[in-house]
Length: 268
Ligand code: 7PJ
View 1 (cartoon, helix red, strand yellow):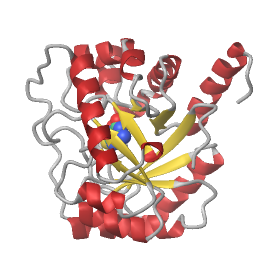
View 2 (cartoon, rainbow, N blue to C red):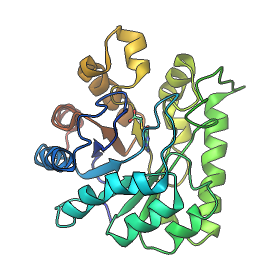
View 3 (cartoon, rainbow, N blue to C red):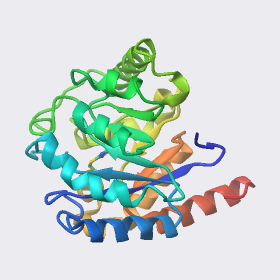
């Protein structure tokens, strides 16, 4: 159960050799665990562990290798004071993660893989359903939408309905428009500008913009130099209704959200 009276910060821990933002830095479990602990100290409300890069063009890994990367980190965080999500599209990895105490499955494929919905339904964990057009290997090749907000909203509504009819109660679900997943810069900007329109889904919105290439396209900066841009984007998303922001830079994001809360007259 997550209290959502203030926006929450999900801290990203990639245990991959090839993530675009911090590729390889935390492939060693001890370093990934130390990084997760640091994000918790910085004020992360939840941690997201990923063992497969979903950056544009990334190659898939098999379930055994993906789980081998995740398991030690998830195991070490069993006693962590915050819930832990596992970022995976694979039902085998979902089942292992849920068996090992994951509190949330973060699926960029929105439980569309055969058996994924059942894997989550058999647990009492939460799930994040994200919109992606196509698959990571090819998704940035000429993505097209008539109306990106309408298409993403309709997709998320359909996935929420499927999850509910498969036995996942609405209170366990969050939805995510999937910035950068089969979207051009113009699509991403329109989604962010009109985020409050997708917000009418009946579930909380989670948004991931941290260090993404759309920020690089606007600022001309490399992934490691997009902190200010990412914090600005997270703030804009929260102003438009996002309830959870998935970020690499937890302390800076929390500071920005504290300013927002203060301006609104609430505490953070
Ligand atoms: C997202 C994600 C996102 C959710 C990644 C990256 C690429 N999960 N996993 N939303 N992005 N829910 O971290 O930039 O936007 S991987």
